[in-house]
Amino acid sequence: MRPATEFAGHGERRAHAQAVGGWRRVVLGAVFASLPILFLGPLARPIPAAPMYWGATIHPEVYGDQASELTAWNTFEQHAGKRITVLNIGQPWGTFDTNMFQIIRDRGAFPLVTMRLSSDVTLADVVAGRQDRVIRAWAQKARAWGFPFLFRPWWEMNGDWYHWGRSPDYVAAWRRFHDLVVAEGATNVTWAWVTNTIWWDPGSDPAPYYPGSAYVDWVGVDAYNWGRNPLQPDRWTTPEETLTPTLSRLRQIAPGKPICVCELASTEIGGDKAAWVSEMLWKYLPHHPEIKAFLWFNWNYEQNGGRWDWPIESSPRALTAFRQGISDPTYLSTLPPMPPLAKVPIPTAPTETQGTGSGPVDIRSPQATITGHPPDRSRRRTVRFRFRSSEGGSTFRCKLDGRPFRRCRSPRIYRNLTPGRHTFRVRAIDQAGNTDPTPARFTFRILR
Image (cartoon, rainbow, N blue to C red; front, side):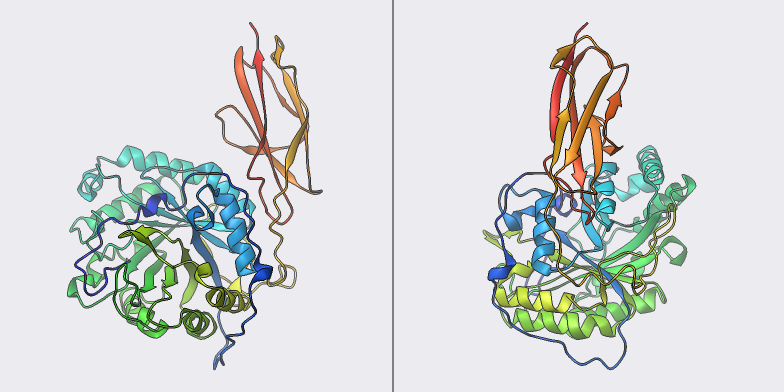
């Protein structure tokens, strides 16, 4: 996200690595049916559109102070009228949250993982090998999980608002990071080199920071129409003006690489956001077959005492335009096969079996209920739990104490437990991929 032309920079005003962090709880009452109907497309296309993955950065703040991530995801898909296939998540340096990755996969999507450097770690530290242990441990977890995901570390390196930006150590650090991960066998890590859009500053040219074709699987860009929003006023830009200069440069730097528009949004102020969204979804993106994925930045984050109007819900007209545009089958809501330890594949048109995902979206979350459990206090070291879901055909994930959630069936038996206090949790996942946001739980104590 570049600074507007009247500003020298915006600092680290986006805690983007935590953009989708925290699993807070809320009950939402948003219903799309109350919105007015407004047709804003489609626009004529001279060429067939290539399919692309679509998704979003979905921040819970958009849907209430206590919104959980799962609830926000459900609500976003309800408003859009279609399932996403890729979700942007932030992970702190060296962190691999297997549970979050699996939840995304269970819902029929794959992660785009955005990873920043810790404030006390520099690219020079990476080049010198002082982060090798952290990197190897992360790579081992990525390999153990096994499934493909897009990985964009140290994004927007052609700006100066992150401490890795415009660093002379960038290329060497990326290559070392890449080689260590490959050496651990984590071939499912799909490396995405993602720049900010270029602007009037010659230093915004990302070419000096490109690690080379052998070290990059996808390239990408973060792009915004800032308009005349007083939070950071610039000028209104069309989809063509917003993206084309940087896309052209990426094709020169990395010819043939698939492109991800990893952050995309527009303000309402200074023009017609609904028309901008309609043009972007119906005309611009489908006319660029090199774009294989795009993600909307659905976060009304705070800046200078106000909140940005990036979300698709910024107005009824904008939301209607987005809902109509995203209904096009260009934007996939089902994934092709993604075998373990393979890269994220180039998207292909869905088969008849897969469908297009353009029908009504089931966002109702199932509820798991524990129907059988051990006594509250007992000397038995073996315990048995029975449970069920509010929806038939659901699968389950169970965990005991601090262990991660894992696939399970009823009854779930644990043996050789140690004396002390234990907590069992179980969540349901329905056939549509909706996940129970409030796992059922039972706490018990084993006596000596």
